[in-house]
Length: 361
Image (cartoon, rainbow, N blue to C red; front, side, top):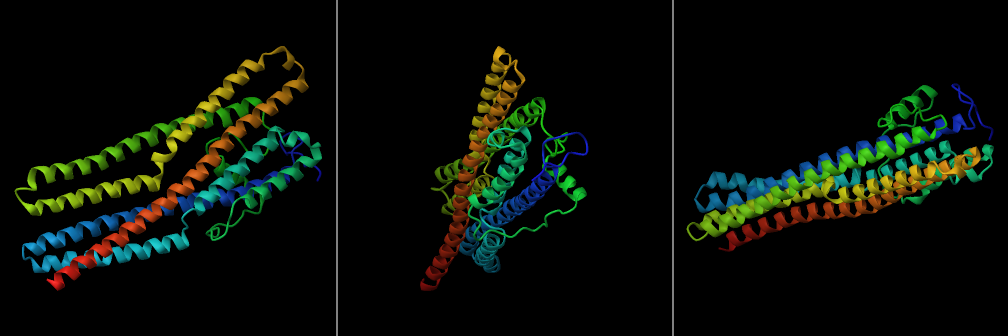
């Protein structure tokens, strides 16, 4: 392939290949974003239904003991129907939103982004190829990224790949929303790379660490507070009025709902990983700043090679974080779905046992 010069300035990059690379990336990027939003919101609805069903089941037992026939019937209907509705929704969500599809698409999109950056920085492995062969390697690597991930039973794309240049430039701007001064098509100077892939990325990690850890603390404390409240109710009021013990079941259900919500959002599982990645970026930055003024880098070719190697090390750090996040996210989301389905099945079974005991009595 021959390199196509940029309209803005001379370049060794193949503009046409870059446009198509971004077009491919945008499909995975946007689909992952949409699927994640639906994934989280819909599971929140199921968690709420599960909590309401648990409370209704407890309430049916309480008002039944008080002889409130109509209220008992109302709560009994809720306790029976809501788990069925929740199970239906959960199975529908898994079938048509996917348990891990958004995770796979996000991994592919960000790994494609890595190769685009390496190509534009002329960093390994692209520096080992002749200039007019580097775009061939980029195309091959983008294909390998897709083939690396098992895409069986994933959800189809819900957007089409952009075709004309204006559309592709629009999706490049969307994909680079955190680096708005990057048009995605030009060679990258070291200063730009430092800002976009080291400083800005480290700032993003640090922001997520603070936000996710704060949310984890709030969620954990609320869940533990609900359990503590149930324990106190049981200890202080259980001997006086046995009906108060039903409140323990409700506080336990609230605690489980809060914990499951945290698992769905994953903020309790990823903040430590993001913190480790931020620290590794800082280490690489210090190492580069120490190396940059060494006399052996006064020669232009030696400096260019050192800059390319530095970019490769940064992308290795980001790849490490991405792979670790991918493995962790798959595990957490699979476990979270199993927990939600188990909770729904448990509520249904408990309600059936209660009705069977009432009939036998």
